[in-house]
Image (cartoon, rainbow, N blue to C red):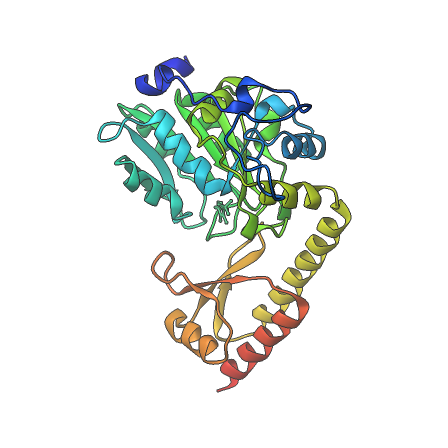
Length: 344
Ligand SMILES: *Cc1c(COP(=O)(O)O)cnc(C)c1O
């Protein structure tokens, strides 16, 4: 049986969270002499610590109640908070499927948590037979699943994710950083069905706001409360909150640019397919292609020489390179470079 309280670190359950001046007086009207702010300037006031306007904009767009939304200083903050809420340093464990996003490991190391890594199958899907016995591991609190996965690009099978959510009594975090590029639906719709589910999204990729650091978590009200208790009181600047709200008010730009990226992604694939230096293009639900090259190190270096910077993922998937889809002009430059390398 899933019981949230038994999963939370005792010090976090007992925590008396910081109470800001704005927590104690909630009105908008008056002369504010309560927070030792400077009365002059335009950025002189502390920002909304609960990012209400941003959450309302997200709520409307994502069709998700505000009470089930947490916003953080990038998904990176949320990943770190989850370790700090659920995992006792030096004792508890987390699990993920590799190759995957590197922050799950870094945040585990910072928090002194052992991260169990189960290799994905050759088709980059989860081997559920291998996984099942691990779900009973003592002190295993968190499972991180990145879907669509970075760097492989694929989504995991819906039935496999459901199996994990139904069988594991700890927290299952599904990182959907690339979900906007995918034809598959978000798992956020299953929040009521699975109280152990946390879905992470971000405005860093499809929303073109990587510089503003906006990460999003969808979870039960009880989990959102824990995130609010543990976060820094003012974890998102006023400037970043405004940038995010502005982006969410301009859905048309978002949709148009996403469409361009998806068209460019398809075009890029047809070019890559015709190159003899490309051995394989892995299926992708994201805004990048992972390709297998004849020799990834050489191809990567050759592209750098032409001032085209891709990500050499040879250390994770043999002879692989991850190529992000750029603007039409950027992709044209990439294609020209690939063609010249291919001929030489
Ligand atoms: C890019 C990416 C993120 C985004 O992280 P932010 O901190 O929100 O910028 C999260 N997860 C994965 C798997 C990513 O590739």
